[in-house]
Image (cartoon, rainbow, N blue to C red):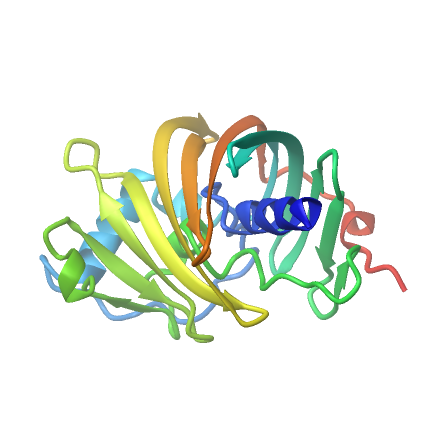
Length: 244
């Protein structure tokens, strides 16, 4: 039972990761009309600019490798992860002592190494949403009333996933974000605090951050550290091949 809980939580840890994972090879839709200064849309645009502007928005591919340490029930579990994204395609793997996980999406089909378990697209929540602010179908709005004491905005996807972003006044960058989502009938609420960034080819990427997960009757904590970040590198199609 404990093993299953660890696998479940590590899986969500990777899925909700604060690492940038948009890497879209196309425009993603028609840009919204210019926004008025002071609106949530204008704030979102300023944050995109603070993270690299057009270089962030036009990034074609991303590869990230690193380590994550998960703490739940007072027990710490180390793991390693790798992620590759190109346009709508993605592949990620988690290697841990309990249950390795691999999920691949080839642009149409999705494969998961754990039978009967599949995560939503990794670009649907968290930092990956930021460059889609201003694209048709991605709604930028005010924070909910109970969070408006903090400076920030919400982005909601066409599928209904949302993330609340909070801004560092000194740098204009994301300092934290929160999301809630339903997977397999379980509501997961997660919050991320970004501790450090790395600039790679003009894009400012979170490289070290901590994350909390509330799953109703339990809470888990994760500490992430990116060891390697590659932007706009060539990724072979075989990386996204779905196993039959």
